Image (cartoon, rainbow, N blue to C red; front, side, top):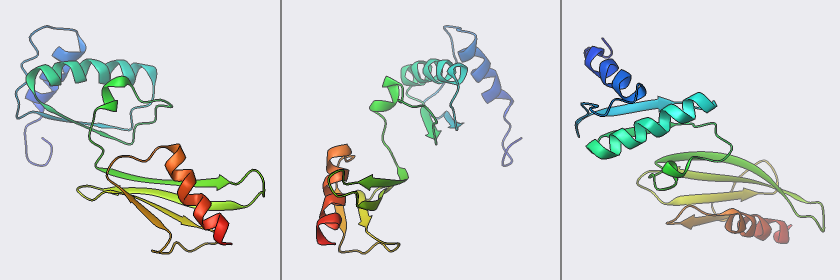
Amino acid sequence: TAAGLPVEPLLKKWGQVMDGSEDHGLAPTDCFFVVSPSTFDELVALRRLYRAAMAARALIVVVNHGFEAPPPELEEASEVYRLQPLDIEEPSTGKVARVCVSRRFPASYEVYAARGKQYEASNRGVFKQKPDDAVVRAVARQVLDES
């Protein structure tokens, strides 16, 4: 059991998904948590699970995937939490800004930037959609231009 709930039926369903069975027996109330998938075998398993879960309208939660490029299935997923620290260097000056992309569902994405060790609320961008590299660099550039 896990958290007082029997896991045998869920493990049986997982086995059916992994062996390629057509009848997965998944229900819309089923939920799978996949924690830190990063290997090729885990990518294959995640993609199989995704197809089966979408057909049954079941839920999959992927926590901290370690893929260099996420599989196409994850591109349409809703990201509910992100904390991504980055260092952005301005090539012409060599100055470095510390940047952090944050998301805590249901809040919007936030991009914080700092020249030193402390992030300030005034050096923040708020975005409804996940910011791409150009947006993150623009927020960092504001901090670098101020210093």
